[in-house]
Length: 313
Image 1 (cartoon, rainbow, N blue to C red):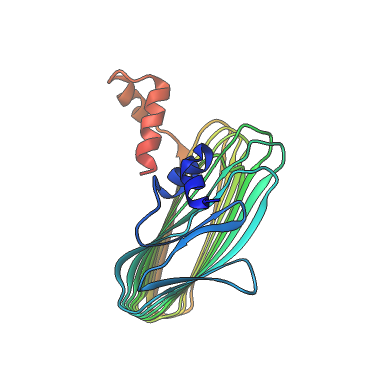
Image 2: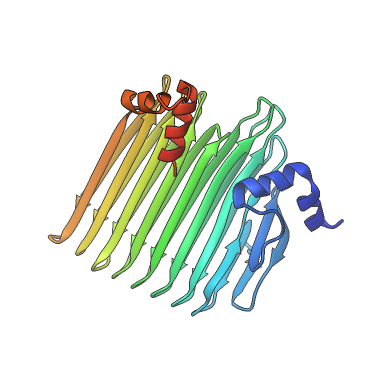
């Protein structure tokens, strides 16, 4: 059986790949695609190697020093009900490399049992390397079973390195716990942008725990949330300045219906030259915003959708 062709031609799995990784065909560059708990297709390059772990489920991704402008796609798709998948992926990014990594998980759950994916990703980013990490979570299906996604990301940034992490969850995930922990070295920078939308009785918890250990280390963490119906989102941000450093954490949330948003900031300065800031804004859509758009001919629902779309960009 040609699993590669099956995934692309199968309507359900091809749609999941489009949603989670923007893939309409097998990508150029290095990739590893996991479907229903198994690796089904892989490609390496001269500069990027992907190896299956022997002691636990998952892969090791090794990027050679100096690698420039290459991409790595590692999407996970689940098209069954009642499946629980756990995977450990480790990334070793060589000195001076510059790569983009596209990850995330999409679940199609048509049945009455819960489907779950827990992904533990560890990043070891070498000196002066640069990583852009894009992670998207998506759920769909017509059954009573819940879609559950719990990503854990552990980051170690060496001297002068930079990591930009873009994380998105817009639809169909009943429960998620998103745990990101990082240690930032001398002159290194960590930028995290998160966008989450929940509805119904969905729950989402985000935990950011960043230690600014290096001299002149920096972090900027932004979470944008739309909390609809009876859903609940909790945002916990901890930044610890252990050296001359700068840290900024920002949480913006729009409430709709009976939605609840909880922001818990924690900044700890253990060094005289640590500059740490936290901001949080939670509230409903401003009435004047709706009125302005409705005067242009939009209905209230269309105006709300327009505002939310702009907010989540």
